Length: 512
Ligand code: FAD
Ligand code: DLZ
Ligand code: SF4
Image (spheres, rainbow, N blue to C red):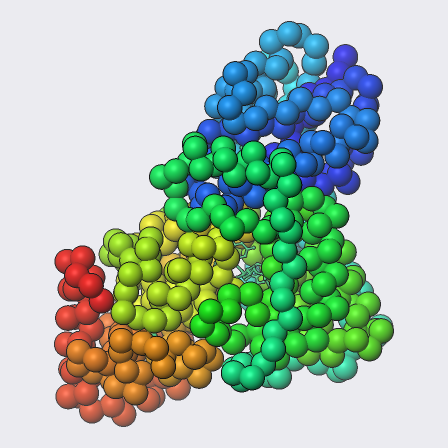
């Protein structure tokens, strides 16, 4: 008898054990574009188009490699609307005695898969996802007994375990982390090399039409569409990054520039997270650039830390803390997401730029997600559930295993500090230092209170003031609370009044 092998939209990797162990003659690979996965949140149109096109190209590559593949398009008459129903439909003929799948990236689907054996009446084998460098078990054994879960220490273990940027047991260059060299704003004269783009082929064009037709009320612009949709194209993106942008990645990784969404970032999370690239090959490519002398250590270490450190850490963290991570709400925040999160219509130029770029590209870089959009979400006390849904649907690289730890743990501190040692909050002066947004803003970054003052300034002190009970004992907040203690009472009162006025405008859907 034979196996029915289900490949999900973010499992487009031909080295997965379900594929390498397949009996190409008898087993059948099933892939399906299903309503349930495309709408459980209303994903950005570009995200759906990207994934459907990449899935179609991957199924073609599998067929070319001799696999038996059944691919169900979104508008196929045989489409059953969900993965479970699609499997049921295919199993009805009685050709298969088992289903093989790879561990999914999301808790909701994993819980559902655990019922499949019972629902389908055949054996369901869930293979571990061997694309990650750390298993959930490795993370659990590292985490057990710890009071704090800090990425930096996990990352050092990973460096040692995998021998990355190491000289024996010591880190190359003598330090584990070179972030102190990595915080430059970008001068206006900087000429950033172009990102790698691809013209849509016939498969992609058909998908773009489908998405326009079927998902018209989803967020975001479907065109222009320039993503890589095959492994070969994704490899080109990686190689151009290593050659052209990695050398300055570290120096400018925190910089933000109006009208320049892509900067020196790698733009590979889309491809890593759906499987067109593997983390190992990206790490190796960067390490080789260092040894070849074509990229400096601060950039190479910084880039490798994002993948070997942060990416692996958040995945382990997700499985370790789910399902509580999704419902934790340390500050009991409940404000609804402002309408401008969907159209960018706000006088705050930093928010306007980041939202408009997100809408156009299904992409924003890390500091935009963290220190503009995330900072605003925490300072204004937005509902964690609504913020989580927004981040999960707007970015083409978003899957819950990576989105949720970043949102709940990193930006909202809704897990009470399991992931971050302190809330990532900042006033307008941080945004002004790292970007050129403030010069085109309806607010003045130098003003602390009143109508024209930058909202981040008074919202910041209002947050510090109103959460003193929960935060002032945190040693990493000590400096901030010392400064706060020195503020004059009347200044705090003026900031609170400005914050209240701003927040009530938000609550009344007035323009801010
Ligand atoms: P680069 O800046 O070039 O970084 C290289 C790679 O490092 C990325 O491709 C990514 O794989 C990895 N990486 C960097 N930072 C992180 C991180 N904090 N967590 C995990 N991996 C990281 N990343 C996602 O892949 N999906 C998400 O849904 C996602 N949501 C985020 C939400 C918030 C609130 C924040 C603050 C960060 C989020 N990130 C997410 C992390 C990071 O912002 C993106 O990985 C990055 O912007 C993707 O662009 P890039 O490929 O150009 O990355
Ligand atoms: C994100 C996504 C979308 C939009 N559509 C599909 C789909 O039609 N078929 C599919 O197999 N996978 C899709 N995915 C990816 C899944 O949602 C993803 O595999 C799970 O969320 C687990 O990470
Ligand atoms: Fe953003 Fe404030 Fe600067 Fe305006 S002044 S761009 S709101 S930080």
